[in-house]
Image 1 (cartoon, rainbow, N blue to C red):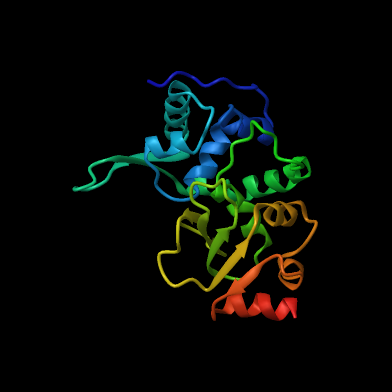
Image 2 (cartoon, helix red, strand yellow):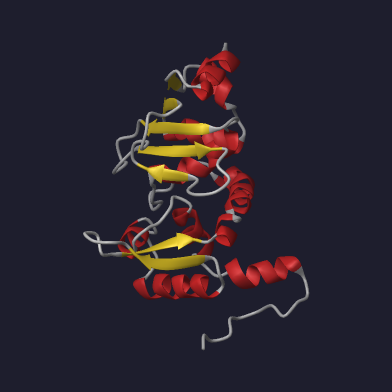
Length: 216
């Protein structure tokens, strides 16, 4: 039997939610799993600062609480991956709201701050209107891989993914991390950034055309 988790012991929905996701690292693990199934080693690589023991413990807690599941990939991969349940995916708007609230803290990047390109996925998803696949390329020299893709308007499945889009995207955006942060802080909208030349939009899909029209 799994040990009883720590609880605030309050009959309050906010307290009950924090009983489940309030531990350090849990919501950041959710952020990573919103990209779809991830191997333990990939999660550890994209959560700099977390110990292997804490990551393993949090994943077990998330399985116990119905937020995530673990399954074995078929051969030739034969590896285990973790993925969100439907209840876990319901945390997407929670993370987007939390990111919006915390955007005001995104001033200058500190020398100790780790950075991954796909960490800008959720703010950009919040700023996009419409449905479709959007490929994003960040023009920054310190990214291991500055390309990721978004599933705008998706109600199930992954919210985003690392690397190029798996199919021809509805739009391609090229921008820098500073512009991403500015969009997340609400200092500029996507159309305004396109109009100002801070975002290059290519593609002939509905989303690309809508962005160019809005910026005209």
